[in-house]
Image (cartoon, rainbow, N blue to C red; front, side, top):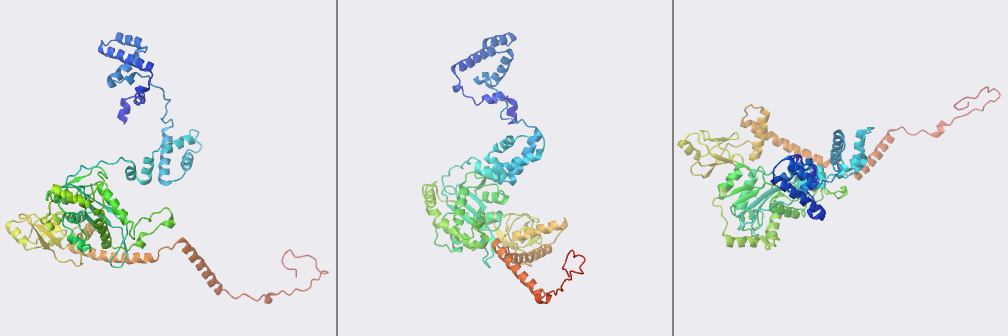
Amino acid sequence: MKALDSEFSASDKSKSHLDLTKLSDEEYGALTLQRNVMDGLLAGERSRLTVENAARLTGKSTATIYRQRKRYVAQRNLLTFLKPKPTGGRGRSRLYPAHEEIIAQELKRFLRRCRGQEVEIFIKAVLARFGQDETKPSTRTIRRRFEALTERQKIAHWEGHGKASQQHNLQKGSTPKCSRPLERIQIDATRSDIWLASAEDGTPLGRPWVTLAIDEFSRVVLAVFVTFNAPSSDELAAVMALAALPKERWLTEYGCEDIDWPFYGVPLVAFTDKGVDFTAHAAGRGLESWGGRWEHRAQPHHGGIIERLIGTAMMQTRLLEGNTRFSKAKRHEDRVDPSKTAKLTRREYTRELIEFFGREYHHRVHPELGMSPHDMWQLGCLNGGEPTKVSDPFAFYLDFLPTVTPTVQKYGVRASFLEYRAPELQKILNAAKSVRVDVKIDPADVTRAFIKHPITGVYFEAQSEPICVASVTREEWEHHRRECLKAAHGRKISRAVVEFSIRTGRLSLDEAKRQRQQNELKRTPPKSLRAAQRKKDTATQVAATSAERLPAPDPKSFQVKRSPIDFANLTSLPTHGDVR
C-alpha cells in the first residue's frame, strides 16, 4: 500500500473512482480535445515550442502540459486531463502524532477491558490523560476514532483475530469433485461439547476429543474415535485403521451388531489441516506405503465438509446429559455446570454417536447429494469399482505409528531406555552386525514393540523386561523420561530412575484425586445459602456469648437511699452527680 501511495499522487487516487458517463457533453469534449492534443504532442518533435503550442490550444500552462504528459504516458487514461477537485484534507488527521498515540493507547485499553460499555468511558479516559493541555482534541474528534473502527476490528480486540476471520472472511473455496468412493477423505478432531464420567466411580473426567473421517464423494462417515488424549500419531493410527478396515468387530465391541456399516477401504488422498499429527513422518509415509498420499489445506476451513460433519455431531451431542450448552449462559441463574450432570462414559458416548450415524445420518437424504450417503456409496461402487482393501490389517495400523530406528546389538534393540528381545533378532545379528531396523512401540504397553524385518518387511513382536509398575503406556513412559532428563541437567539417567518417577507420579496422582474430591465437598455454596448460614452462625455465636456472661443483677438491690437535703446549711450546688 505504501508503494502505491508513493507511485500515484493524491489527485490520481481521487480520480480513480470517477465515471465518464457522469460528465457533461462540454466536459467530455474538453477532455477529448486535450487527449488529441497530447497524442499529437507525443507523436511529433519533443521541443519547447511544441509544448507551448499545446498549452495555447488547451488553455493550460506549460508546466501543466509537462505534468499531464508524464501522467498520460504512464496511464493512457482520459481522466488524466480532468482537473482534480480540492478535498480540503478530508479524511486525514490534523492532530499531533503524540496526541494520536495517546488516543490509540486508550482506545486499545478500552476495547480490551470495557467490552459493551459506553464510549463516554473512553472519551473521559483520553481527556484525563491530557489534563489541562489547551491543545487536547475535542470530544467529537475522540469519538470519531472509535466510530472509525470496523466490526471486524472490534471483534479482533474482543475475541481475537481467529474469531474475527471466522466471522468476516469470505467463504473458502471447495475441493475438486470426486468421481468414486475413497478418492478423497477428510479427517479432523475437535473437543466435544460434553463432559464424560468415569466408568468405575462416576467421577467427572472432562471433555473428550472426537476424531471423525468422512468420504467426500458419498459423505459417509468412515471413522468415529473418542478419546481423552490430545490428537497425536497414536490416535491417528487408530482412526486410519478404523476407516480402512471392516467395521464388524468394532460394532460388536459397542453392542451395535445390527447396524449396517459397509464403508471401508484405503483412501487415495487424505485431506487435512496442518496439525502436528497430520504432518508427522509416520502419517505421510504410512499412507504412501499403501498407495495413498496426504494433502494439507492452505487455509482453515477450506472445503468445509469435515467441519459441517463435526457441527452435525455436536448438535446431536448437545441433546445428551452433561452437555456444555448452558455452561456459559449470560444469566448466572441459567448456567448449568456440566461436571455435575455428567453421566455418560466414553464407551456410552461413542455408542450414541455410532447409533446416530449408523441409523439416521447414513439413511437420510443429504442436501448436497440429493440422496442418502448409503445409496451414494453403493452407486459409486457400482460405477467406479470396489475400493482398495487392506491385505494386512495389523501392518496397516503399525505403519502409522511413530518409528525409531536403533541398531541390532547383542542385547537386542534399545529404545527409550528399554531393551527389546526376540528370537528373530538372532538371525538378523548372524547376517550382519549393527543393522538398523524400524521399531514400533505399542502405545498401550511400552514393554511390547514390533520390529520390521529389514529384508522381508514383516513385523514380529519383541518384549522387554517387565516394569515394576503395571500397564504403562508409551505416552506415560515418554513423559516421565523427558521429565527425568530435564531434572538431570544433562547427566545420564537409568531405567530405574524413570520407573521410580512413574511410581511416585502415580501416587501423587491418586493423592491429587483425593484432594479434588475433598474440594468438591467444600465447594462454595450459592449466595443465598451463604447468607442463611451466616445468619445462623451469628445467632449461635450470640447465644454462646450470652451463656458465658454473669447473671443479670436484681434491680431492687441497687435502690439508692436518699437523705433529706438541709437547705439552710447548703452553701453551693454540685455541678454534676446526685445531690447528696
